Image 1: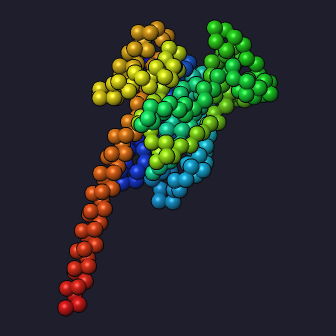
Image 2: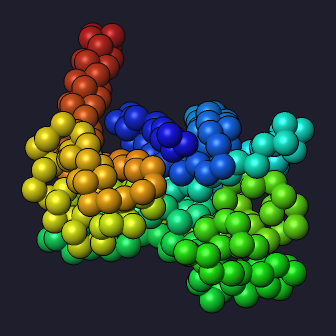
Image 3: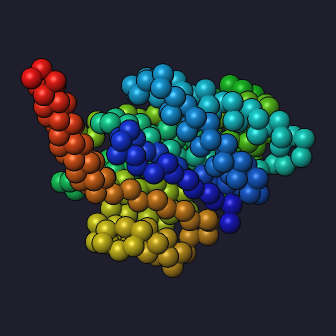
Length: 278
């Protein structure tokens, strides 16, 4: 199993959280490395008091962290002669902003409270004309061998690691972003998953399946992974379901309690001051 996942649990105090799925290939080293190092670096950035949570600032921070971690991984992989790589699909939430960063062919989708489905990422496949042109411009080529592959080898056009292809600029680690307003879009849940799911499920089938199983443990993610396996998926399958309706409920309760606590403290302070003047 080469896939990995990680998350920063929702903090009601800071009103932020992060979730990610990493689809490894060619070995476990790349996925293990970025699962650990990427989260360490991002957690360090977002807990700094100077961190700005605007979408542009988040994207700038992620770009910097992604490039740094990938450069470290490529150096280590070259020294180890390790050819592994990994895609990444990352969802970062801060206040009402949801920023999704995608590197590779994993995918994120959102279902809002009315049942509307929005795909939050673009699959980075070598067959995509834009991706294919970038590869050709770098001096590479794309061939079909069961699926379209970069230089006849890799079935995704963006990834961490993959140092031989990365050094020749055939593969890039540049993230592609989408930004959404939680207050406006009102997501019910989002699904992050490696392509082992999307090989046998389309977006509509996933939403219908999860909608009927949100009361299950793991919000239906385990059942969905098993169903993808039963449908004949030949790839690793990793799925995360984030129940945003539940998150909003918890956040509202926290803010109400904090508001009551602040009001109580304010009233006590006012009373103490009045007593001092008598």
